[in-house]
Amino acid sequence: MVGISTKIDTRYWNISPHRPERGKVIQASSIISGGGIVAFPTETVYGLGADAWNSRAIEKIYLAKERPADNPLIVHIAYFHQMRDLVQDITPTARYLARRFWPGPLTLVLPKGNGIPEIVTAGLDTVAIRMPAHPVAKSLIYYSRRPIVAPSANRSGRPSPTTALHVLRDMYGRIDGVMDGGTAKVGVESTVLDITGDIPIILRPGGIPLEDLERALGQVDLDTGLESRGEDTKPRSPGMKYRHYAPKGELHIFLGGPDVVTAKAMVEAAGEWWRKGGRVGILCSREVYEMINEMDDISDAIYFMRSLGGWDDPGAAARGLYSALHQCDLDEVDIILVQALPTRGIGLAVMNRLLKAAGNRVVKV
Ligand code: TXA
Ligand code: MG
Image 1 (spheres, protein in one colour):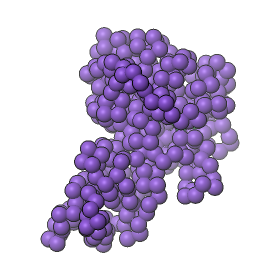
Image 2 (image 1 turned 90 degrees about the horizontal axis):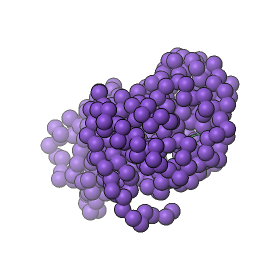
Image 3 (image 1 turned 90 degrees about the vertical axis):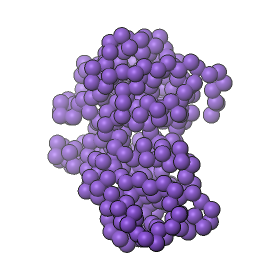
Image 4 (image 1 turned 180 degrees about the vertical axis):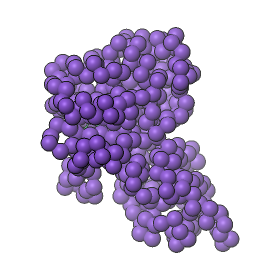
C-alpha cells in the first residue's frame, strides 16, 4: 500500500458532546463537503468521515488508514429519509429495526442503491448503513447535507480510537481535522447485521447485543465465518478476515473464571515471559486484578496491569477495552496477557475483538 508523502495540516476542534457548537460543526462540515476527511466522535468509536458521494474524498480515507481496498465502508445518516437514495428498497425489516435501534450502534446491510460509488461498497452489491446517536456525529452529517462514510479512525489493523487523542496518535498529518467530543461511550464498534436474506445474520458482533436482536426478530444467526479459526470459511464481512484491533505487543488470552486459579496462571505466565526478557502487561477482570494485587509472591514481572471491570459487567469491559490496548502500546509492552470474559451481551463483541487481536492465541487455565 502506498504511504502518504505530503503531511496534511490537521485541524483540531474541541467540541461539546452534548450541545455541539454550531460554528465549529459548520467549519468541519465544509471540509467534508469540499472533499476533505475529518475524524469525529460517535457513541461507539471515533470515525473518519468523507462525503459518501465523492469517490476522490473516499480514496483519501483508504490512503490515510492504509486500508485494504476490498474492505467496504459504513454509510452514516442523520435521519431516516437519507436512506432512500442509498438502498434498492427500504424493507419492512429495515424500517422496524431502524425504529427500534436507531439512532444507535446497529449497522444494517441491504441491497445497494444505484448511485453509490463503487469505492464505498468495495464492489459488493450491498451497502452498510447506520444512524449514529452521538450529537456531534449527527450534526456533522446534518450540516454536511449528505451521508458520510466513516470507518473507525485508526490505521488499519490497529485498535480503534475511543478518544480524539487516540485518533491524533494514529492520524495526525494524514487527515484534515479532528472533532474532539470526549470519550466514546460504548467503546466497541456497531453490530453489523445482514438483512438481505430470510434470517438476519450478524456479520460483526458489536454495540447492540445478539440477545436484543433475537428479542426483536426471533431467529438471528451468527456468521459462521466469525467462529472459524482456520482459513476455510470466509467471513461475509470483508473486514473480519484481517488480523485486526491489534496492539503492537503479542496478545494471549487466558480462558479462566474470576478466581485464584486464573490469577495464579496469569502471574506464572508473566514471570516466564519476564525471565525471557519480555515486558509484560495484564488485562483482567476486577476480581482477578484484586487477587493478583494481594499475592505476596508477586514478582517484578508485571509492567502494566489494568482491570476491565467486574466479571459480570461486559459493558465496562467494552468501554475500557481499546483504551487498555492503546495503553499497552504507550507502555511498549511486548506480551499482553488477557483474561477471557463472558460472551453475554456486549461481551460477545469484546471477545470477538480480543480473539482477533490475539490471532487466536488461547491458553486454557
Ligand atoms: O461503530 C462503527 O461501526 C464505527 C463507527 C465509526 O460508526 N465504524 C466502523 O467502520 O467500525 P469500519 O470500517 O471500521 O468497519 C466496518 C465493517 C467492516 O468489517 C466492513 O467489512 C463491514 O463493516 N462492511 C461494510 N460494508 C459492508 C457490506 N456491504 N457487507 C458486509 N460487510 C460490510
Ligand atoms: Mg475498523
